[in-house]
Image (cartoon, rainbow, N blue to C red; front, side, top):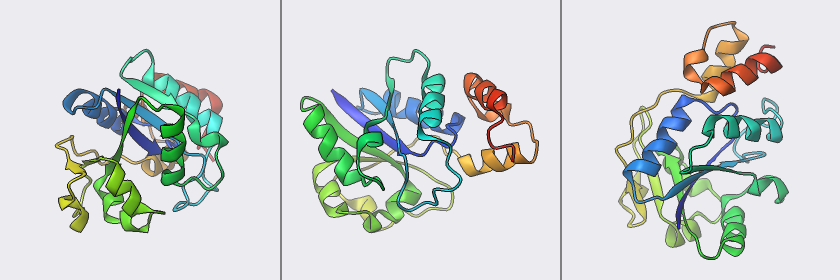
Length: 191
């Protein structure tokens, strides 16, 4: 099975993530998309992160019973901070019959050369890239393993969602309904 790995903090998961995952599962040759919840992205501050299990729970709420989408907590048991190259090696060992590819935004492709062992990732894995506002994919966009998609341009971020909640804005339309209900019930991001 060909799996697209959609890495992220998902702090929180929002409709932009869901649109992109559904696009990748429906309009590319990926058979499933796995949301890989990262306990800590080495390029981001850890202080604003909700607990990894709460973020995983929200991803599961968002996915519901969609058979083409799955959540993964594979990085929860790996050394911190999480490096994609280590996660890929672990997944390959755990699921030897699956073929894995990465899903990332153009903004991440621009900074991809800062990733640990990025050349090895690029050599051994396909990368499905979705457009991001004001991005130029850089020189890597012409690499044979980089697949530029025509996914809808989504200009929604988890940072925007967190700030809006803190400022008492109604952002229920930006989140899958079960996620919005859970966030509201738990009073997440309100302070």
